[in-house]
Image 1 (tube, each protein chain N blue to C red):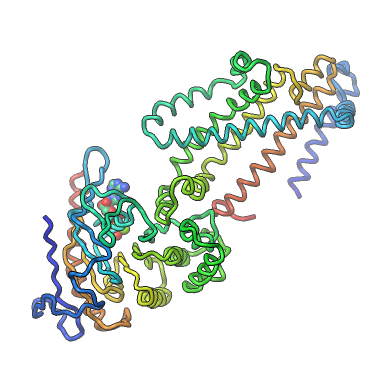
Image 2 (cartoon, rainbow over the protein chains, first blue to last red):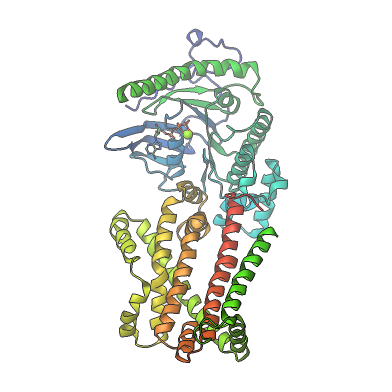
Length: 304
Length: 253
Ligand SMILES: Nc1ncnc2c1ncn2[C@@H]1O[C@H](COP(=O)(O)OP(=O)(O)OP(=O)(O)O)[C@@H](O)[C@H]1O
Ligand SMILES: [Mg+2]
């Protein structure tokens, strides 16, 4: 069960959005970042599976044999219907949850537990309400043992980056949802991990702020060469940001397809080319969403 | 301000009735002292330093005993909360032990430690240990799991995870238990001091009885209430309010 059909239809602005009519170039696509397929991967997931014990004796296969390689400096986006296991996957990569089977490797080293080389921005954010905004941003650096002066400098830098410099002494409950997401982003960035794991980090932002942060994130990514795994519901966002988009199936969570996004940067959410590519993925995603709705409906019927 | 006025009126009336009853000499003064008598006792007690010494001795015992029980309670509570087996067995035992008034530990303590300072500390610790332990245990369970995960994700491990994340994250859930622990410790201490005579406010209370000095008895009782109230009202309420403001659990006033 380890076959992941990696189809690479190649999203370029020349091609028609109708999948059937594409001439299949296997690897004829220009990789966005130089690093051939056989170069060492930054992040390798090997046959990753995770089973949850649901209530009672029933079990839920949340992840089923995930094989995935992420190249150094690659921007990978993961899309999939709600409840398909995206957050679970990020938790496993971050080392916060033990997989039932399989391995996580960073630079070919087997990972066992969390590390500041992989920082996750939680879907629920997990900001510390007993600390101020700047203390939150500082936290990871403090744990890494970075000197105070340097910490303060970086806190200032990253808070400015997310446009929250004036709120450095506020407590979390005094911020809006979007501001909290930005604090979480700053906290993760300030820890300066090799691999940044982001779980729908921009879901609660208004369009303007989101566009701005897309640009900033893209700039930081380009400057620092960080590897990013970015989970989102928004297919357009995935195409806007990603070098590659992986589509998850609904229960059990598997990688249904991968799409290489071969559009020139900088891109914009409103670009026609982005919209075209997104539409194609959306068609596949809709199939999975329908499955999830059907499953939900069937469950409802069974319960009665 | 209005609230203050209501309190002032209430206490004036209360003391007024008390003074009136004393003035009417319904009961003899050695049974029912006048407010003036009690105030004089208070003044005399502070003037000859006996009250100050008693307060000092009692507070020292409290601080020692309470700190010990918070430390022990943390270790025990977290230990119990971290293990399913312990939680079922020890957890149940702890709750059932709570029905035992802590002064019941005094005979045992005296047999173990003799009539020493250790015995009274033991009673104080036993008085508050259980509520602190149970508070820690429930705090650890009620605390949202996300904080521990976020802490580990950002590189916190072991003691630093406990100190920087788990403890502050569970504080809103354990503060009421810590407060209750303090109140229990205070009661245990006074009862202990009353029975096991060696300085302290409890002993002062018994001395008043021995001397048939009702004014002193009332004066010391007022002291005990006042200290309990001050610590509760000033120390714990302030901590609670600060926590609530930080966390946004209550509107800032
Ligand atoms: N602690 C848990 N115990 C049992 N089942 C769980 C647990 N956490 C998640 N699940 C189940 O695992 C599946 C995947 O959950 P997950 O949170 O990874 O989904 P997701 O893809 O992130 O969804 P969303 O897009 O809505 O955030 C869901 O069906 C969920 O019910
Ligand atoms: Mg999720």
